[in-house]
Image (cartoon, one colour):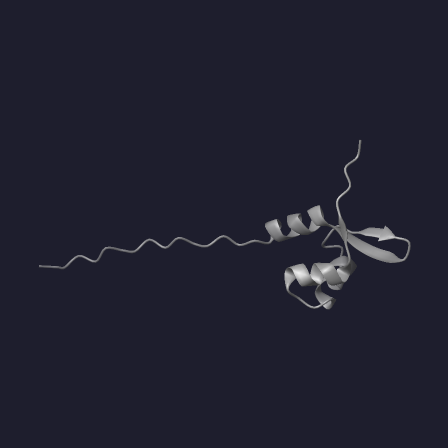
Length: 72
């Protein structure tokens, strides 16, 4: 049995990412995200969008403070 993700439109992907529609369209054109062609329509599976976000998430850097010692 095959599980099918919910297929999102380009507009829905743009809303999730908080961008304009040009950004997801560029991702599709440059083949940087998985997409499905349904006739002439383009859809992006939710799992592909989640994977893209996870892959491009940058973790914060932990900074260790140096202990300054007074010189006697």
